[in-house]
Image 1 (tube, rainbow, N blue to C red):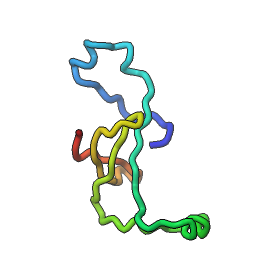
Image 2: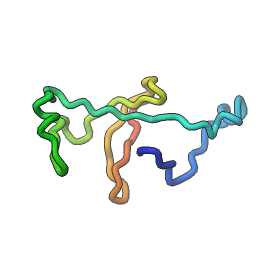
Image 3: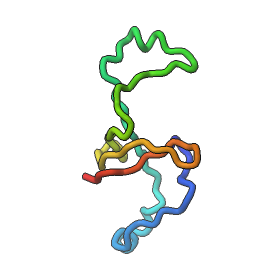
Length: 92
């Protein structure tokens, strides 16, 4: 994720291309939040390089996805070619 562009070109739906084609390449920020219940200042101060933080979430647990601060759906983490990815599971 970060500030790197996607590896492959993503094509928007035809209706989106026709309405405002100039806006299609404007940047936007996609955030995936991973809440860690019961995380305290004590835990924060104990963090070091290589620390592991137990999220208490099971594999495949859904996490919220926001674009420019607006909730757009739910996703789960996945690994593709050794890289962390987010698979959208629901759009709202």
